[in-house]
Length: 176
View (cartoon, rainbow, N blue to C red):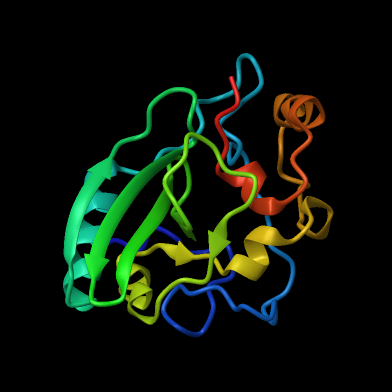
């Protein structure tokens, strides 16, 4: 199995799960996390939608549910989206299109500024595939509480333009 997150994002103790209480420290935003880059810079990295889909189907099985769909990222979204159903209801997840990050949300939308939910316990399976599952507390935290030193000038231009208030709104955006 490929470890997509080796050396990135300070994985939590639960197989790539983010700590809800923020105990692992400051979250570092890596270059390209907004989906933008400086002119002439190398392309932003990408997560393979097939790897995301495989992880999602494994997580659905672990939940005792069924993966209902997986939609690949469409411009200008910075994320793929997925839905699964189990005995506890319907779960919606966002897989970041450029870095191995996952968020759970209340409903499927075109973009996100809020609506982040705590991941279900079975989401730890996603960590086995190299993804870091972010807590709702982390996603709702102000962007200023994150380490943004690796972001490019173009990413900062987009942040100043779109003015996201939270880490989640910065990561899971539909900026064009």
